[in-house]
Length: 142
Image (tube, rainbow, N blue to C red; front, side):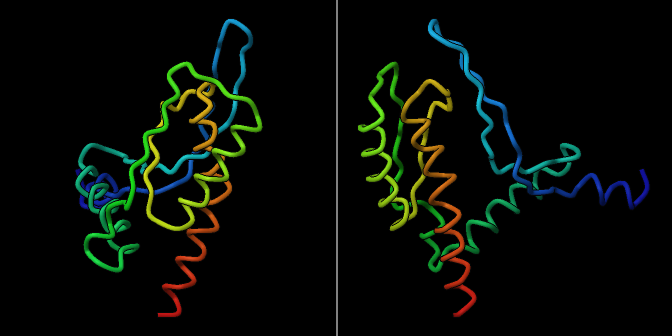
């Protein structure tokens, strides 16, 4: 393998990818596209660089060493529970306020039929771009 091929096989690329998530329940089948961050690797040799890339991203967003970790980890797994649109909006509004104010990791089942996964996905699409933009603007001023 020549030097150029070795260099390429060690690179990692960060992208946002679209994932088609489908759910089949006894009542209906439904699909939705979710946008997710991804690190693309051309080979296994790129894994160390991918780890470095992820941790550098965390470190860049931290103003202190311990802020690379979340302030709060929230598991959002409904395990078969459902709730109506009004309750979902209340949960989404409350969680959005938390996400806007502190570093949060939300853990979900990722299933389309899970109402809490739907809430987390909605918050990710609506709130996080604004939070990230605010953080970048604040960092650029410092």
